[in-house]
Length: 569
Image 1 (cartoon, rainbow, N blue to C red):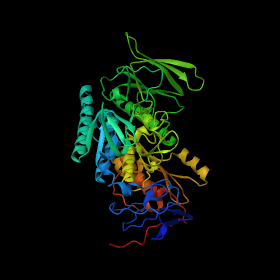
Image 2 (cartoon, rainbow, N blue to C red; image 1 turned 90 degrees about the horizontal axis):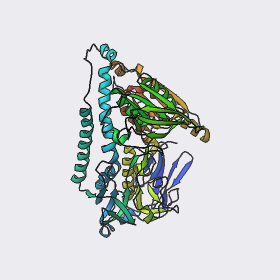
Image 3 (cartoon, rainbow, N blue to C red; image 1 turned 135 degrees about the vertical axis):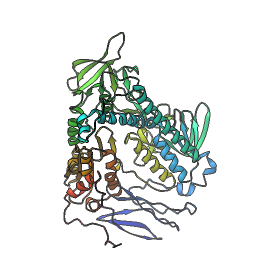
């Protein structure tokens, strides 16, 4: 299914969009405003419409399709209700998601306030993405300076590299402070009211912040984020048994640290600690390391990121009890077999980092005041981020984005969800295609991905009755990578050979986190392989890894391209 289509519109009938053998019915709008169709990435399906001028409220006639419950009341009440509320939009939580929503809301002309009970920037800026990248920047430099063979290949000679722990920690802290200041200033410059205090929903359209401050809003977004998840039996003291929040302060560099969990957080910290001289032991509950990654990428990453470094690991075991170091005794970790539940070993290490994921921060939000029951702490939402109550009904004018809803716990996903919500409250139906949102692990080399893994794609293909093909390219064939002596890397494309749909792209190699966006944008825009393979990439650049990847894909010769006749310029 692709994004090419034809449609007809008259004042007496609903617009009908015809594509392939499918017909979708939409609202008929009698208005001088232009009709704009929105698309959902992978399938390119028409998802909604937009009246460009809110001053001429459209008359809604009918909604024949699957979105029958979607009522775009905001088209007519955006201005009429502004006088009834203190704000058009109130956002609870000033992390990356809340910040992105606030900026887009101002762009759309909404009077906006953002409530923050901690500090602007949330987890990402203060205890996550931002300071961790500062530490990883240091680890990358250290690896380069410590790799004598690599330097000699360039004809360089460097004395033994060393570091100052406090200087490294200051770099991370200073970066977080700078970004936090930038976010705060951007909100103030645009006229967003920053309200200090913990936000609580009192009822429909009513929010309290701080002790006794109550405001009203036509629409409210929950964007409270998450906190580190610590399993039962683990005692965190913040010094020898720590979470990522503590680790980012880099108060000390232990000689031997156990990392519980080998996902994004665990992998990145293993990169930092080993570069700074620590020995690392991974403890992973599943049977293989890096279980969330594509298996082929995981295998190669383990060969490059783990096996040559001072890292050992235990898989298929739980860390059922962890006791901090005290009274001269080391940190003790009791390991239990994940299958038999029998204790298998006890480790004694200098420190332990708990990297078992994150949990939603939704306690005290007042969800009970609007009959919403959290599910394992997550706020239940539909595909439009609208909050669902305990009876399965939508809570009017209330949305939840980011880690608090659990759909995709990434900072940029939260921001994208926030922007999507603002589109909706200002009259444009919009659904975010989460399969088009990329993810990255900033190790050295980096790992990035978007869409489905190969097992996920094959499972989907079996259910829906289509074939899956794989294309691969190596960084060893890329001129720029070889010039940098960074030929270790792989790019993998998962696609449908019958129609050219991109199902997933996975990259392991130099600057993989930057390269993935061409693929994620292709998925988001519904661009097929037979179209993107004609795109021109500058030479010599790392982007040619993807250029070769698309050209290596074999799409059926019967599949036509929607590209129109080229125009000579």
